[in-house]
Length: 553
Image 1 (spheres, rainbow, N blue to C red):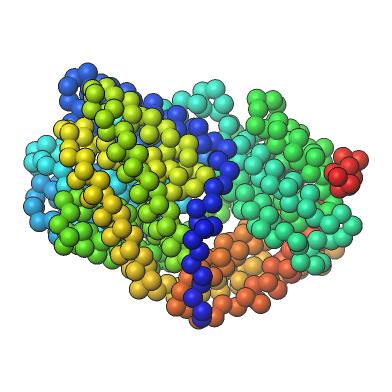
Image 2 (image 1 turned 45 degrees about the vertical axis):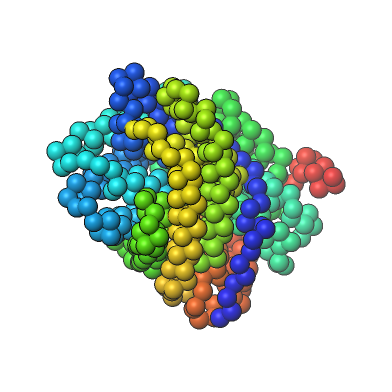
């Protein structure tokens, strides 16, 4: 199979900022500020490296409903402090840098696999690896470990409270935002559909918009199904069914109405009530899907074995190479390698370029900020808070742009205990960035992921089987509404998984040829069946005057 092209320019292109970029940005500032200012007042800013482990948990789970967020954040705090504890114990038991790098690489691999298997979401394993790897090289004794872990747990509890606090004002905010995003992308896709034809009879001129909209709808379903409150959940489910209808039969949908619903969801207005004939029997399809649950964690970890091996090998080799070059902080190379690994080699290359560009620009920012931060420790704390905010404000536009703030912040944290030689810090960070990126990418190429092709085959089979089930129901004279809805939902979810699996496999190296023609045929056939199912359910909307006006424009 020919190797994919490795781009450069497109990798650095800026995207639109995340809709909720300000939520993690503000949360992490509040979560970091209180512990740091307390330690500053006590004259123990050197302990901030431990409280940061708990405070940075405030970056996670902002897209989840509050009930689910409470559980996920609790696990993040436990995982973060668990990694910190292992690292501190290892550091207190041995002075061997080789052993410590090995422990860091194994921790990074475990963190990567668990974050991917549980679909934790950004910033995923990178922050976990940063904390555990840096802690491996902190001075300390075994007797100090409980106290330092307790500081992290205390800061983590504060971060948990900070992230849960908005729920007092908008208890259903995350699921409303997720549904609004799905409706907006579905409307954009429906706008692009030919107004006088069935878009699934022929290839659609904008397949990427359909992929993005389908992924947003699928993500919104996962969010809504993890929410509490039957009344709100059912209202959002009705809206999501409308978004799915727009994907299945875009020419027969009303983008203006979808956008109006999305606007109402983003504010504090009452939940929109679609004027349709969906009843509880049809919504039972969503209830049945909720009851199925997810596959056991062990089964989800299996396909991730090649990625975990890449992470362990790449992090270990990057750390060893840094040691061989005489760098005093090999964990920077280790963390650089850990941050690279994505779903395939091509995406890993993209992240490597972004990481190098962002870090190199970041060390220049650090050089400019050092004189200011050394005026007083208050200035050091305030600059780090500003960089925390800037990182979250920018990173959703492109990883490299966020790294421009993350890099100087990581360098300044080393000065919490005592001022460092800034010239040496800059040199070591540049060397470790280049070493970590180069060695990490070589490890990604060397460790093949032939399971990507197997996963694509399984995803294809799942779509074909879901399509056959839907076709059999359509052939029945009076299919049960709940069964028809559940089957349609299953086929839509299988299509999303197929597209994601196909894109991941297409960017992987050293594997057999992919069944691209079979993928295209399966997708087209499944989309036609989805459109037929929508019509059988009577869910499509007749084009309105607003829709006709949109088309004429």
